[in-house]
Length: 199
Image 1 (cartoon, rainbow, N blue to C red):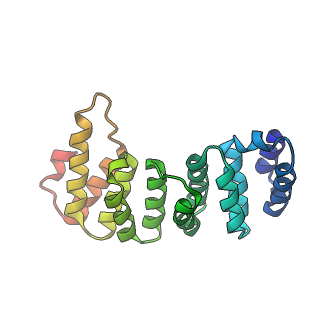
Image 2 (cartoon, rainbow, N blue to C red):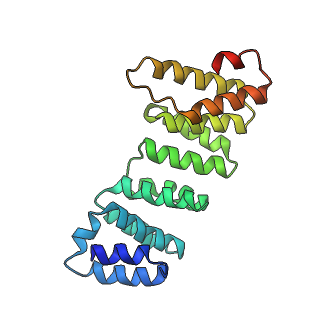
Image 3 (spheres, rainbow, N blue to C red):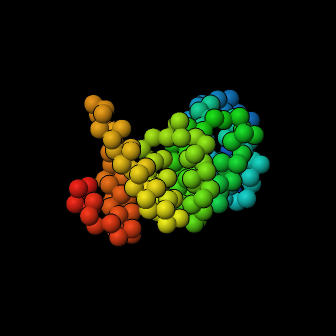
């Protein structure tokens, strides 16, 4: 069942309604537990349910996944990659119902969706509430949100603080994207005096 579902999902003739029928057959079989333990497959099935508007079914599938939040993250990543950011936001709103605790990856994906939809304020609110689980990707999205709101000084301050923090670590996580966003904030602010120091 696991191999058959994987093959079906990768097929160019993939049909979401057909996939859901296949899933229904597996649900009633002995192989159900094997499938539920595979977060990639569960994410694929839940994504198909979302695409054809079966939101309740998608939630039920996610709830039965053994790898809960990681399965949700996989669905959100697929949603963002196809620019269906509303689905990512909708899923985020279901986390409490599902009983899943978001992690830094979830936070990054939801903030990215908000930023892409031009809802920078919502992205920053999420960051402020969950800053204790924020990794470098989350900080990148928070900086992007500040830039989106034309809060260039705040973007620069947040970025420089994080760089200082990372430099104290043996293996720092300073990314090219973080530096790019810092430079973008300097350029938009018109602050070219500090610009060479950073580069």
